[in-house]
Amino acid sequence: MILPNIKEARVRTKDKVEISYDKYNIPNTIKGIGKNKKYTILTYGCQMNVHDSENISGIMEELEYTKEENYEKADVIILNTCAIRENAHNKVIGILGRIKKLKEENPNIITIIGGCMPQEESVSNMLKDKYKWVDIVLGTHNIYDIPVLLDNIMKERKQNIEVYSIEGSIIENLPVKRDSKYKAWVNIQYGCDKFCSYCIVPYTRGKQRSRLPIDILKEVQELKDKGYKEVTLLGQNVNAYGKDLENKYTMANLLEDVSKIGIDRIRFVTSHPWDFSSEMIDVIAKYDNIMPYIHLPIQSGSDNILKKMNRRYSTNEYKKLFYELKEKIPGVSITTDIIVGFPNETEEDFQKTIDIYNELKYDLAYTFIYSPREGTPASTMKDNVPKEVKEERLQRLNKVVNKYAKENNEKYLNKVVPVLIEGYSDKGNKLMGYTDTMKLVNVEADPSYIGKIVDIYITEVKTWSMEGVLNSDRN
Ligand code: SAH
Ligand code: SF4
Ligand code: F3S
Image (cartoon, rainbow, N blue to C red; front, side):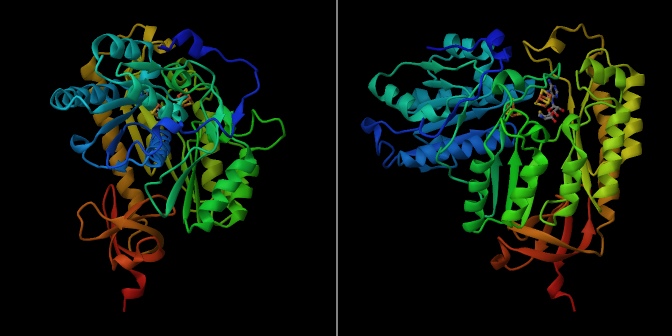
C-alpha cells in the first residue's frame, strides 16, 4: 500500500524529468484476461482526465475487455475522478454508494478508482478506512500500472492502494482508444507549477513537464495520416510549454511545427495569461489551421483578489494581452474562467469582475463558486463571505455571461462559417459540430457529412448554440 502525502506533493526539484518509452507492459499471467468481460469508465473533470480515460480504455482493450456504457452491466468499473471542487468530489461519493450495492449482489465486480481524488490524502485514507470493497486505488502517475494492479487483484482479492506523491515522469507509448475518429487530444505538458493559492492541481498532477517535441509531432502526424481533422494540444499551462526542456523550444515553435504538419484544425488548452508571448500570438495569426479560439482564464477582475489567488498578473496586464489577441487575430473568440466568492471577496471586488466582464465581453465564461481544497494555502484563509452571498454573486455574474454569449453569437447570424461535423446532436434529429471559434452549431444534414468540415449558413442564434443549414443547400 502506498498512500499520498501532500507535503511530498508540494516539492519541486530541478531534477531531470525521466521519460520512459517502455514502462507499460502486460504481464503474461493476465494476457487476454478481459475476454468476454466488459468494462465501464466514468470520467469526471477536465480534458486531461478525458484523455487519460482514453489511455485507460486503450489498456483495457489490450487486455481484451469490451467497452460497456452502462456501468451496471460491467465486470470492471473504473472511476477517473476530479478533485478541483467539492461538487466533483460529491458526485463520485454518490456513485460509489450505487456501485457498493451492485457489488453486494455480485462480488466479482472489480472497482478501480483513479485520477485526481486519490491524490488527496484525505480521500485515499477514506477509501482505505471506509471503502475497503474498492479493489484498486491509483493516482495520476501510474496509469501504466493498471495491468499489474489487476494481476495482483486476480491473485489475491484485497484492496490495493498505490498513489504516488511524486513530481512525476513522462510515460510514452501508452495504448489509446480515442472517443472520436475526427478530433483528438494530444498531451504536450503534464503537471503545473503555478500554485494558484486555491488550486489542488499542482498537488494532484506533479511538476510541470513538457513532452519532447519529436514525440508530439510524431503523434500529430500519425493522427493526420489516420484522417483526423482536429487536434487539441493539452496542458494546464500550455503557453509555458518547453520552459523545462534542455533545448530552447517554445510553445510558439511547437504551434508552428504542428501547423506545418497540415492537420485541418489545431486548438490548445489551457492558456495561463502569464506565459502568453507575442511570438505565440503572431504564430496563431499567421497560420490558418491554428483556430482563432483562446481560453484565457482571468479568475477575478479585482487586483486585490488576483494577488491573494497568486495569479501573477494584474488586470491591466491581462487586458493588454486580451487586446493584443483581439487586434492581431481577426475574429478571435475568447472565453474565460471566473471564481466568485474567494475568501473575503468584497462586493467591490466582485463589482470589478462584473466591470471587466462588461468591458471585455467574453464569448463565454465558465463560472464557479470558490471551493476550499485541503492542503492549498487559500483553504486556511478565514472567510467572512456567507454562502448565500456567493450564490447570489454567481447568479448575477451568469446573467452577464449569458448576455454577452448571445450578443457575440448574433454576429454569426446569416453568415457562412466552416463547421467540423462531429455526429448527431443531443436532440438526435440534427447533426452537430463546432465552428473554428468553438461555437456549437446544429445542422440539418445527411449523416454522410459526419467527419467533414462544411460551410454552414447560420439561420438562428441562441445563448449556447446556433442553428444552421448547409450552405450548398441554399438556393
Ligand atoms: N490550468 C487552468 C485551470 C484548470 S482548473 C488555468 O489556470 O487556467 C479549471 C478552473 O477551475 C480554473 O480556471 C478555476 O476557475 C477553477 N477552479 C480551480 N480551483 C478551484 C477552486 N478551489 N474552487 C473553485 N474553482 C476552482
Ligand atoms: Fe491550478 Fe493555477 Fe495551475 Fe491552473 S495555473 S492548474 S488554476 S495552479
Ligand atoms: Fe480535476 Fe484533476 Fe483536471 S483536479 S480539473 S481532473 S487536473
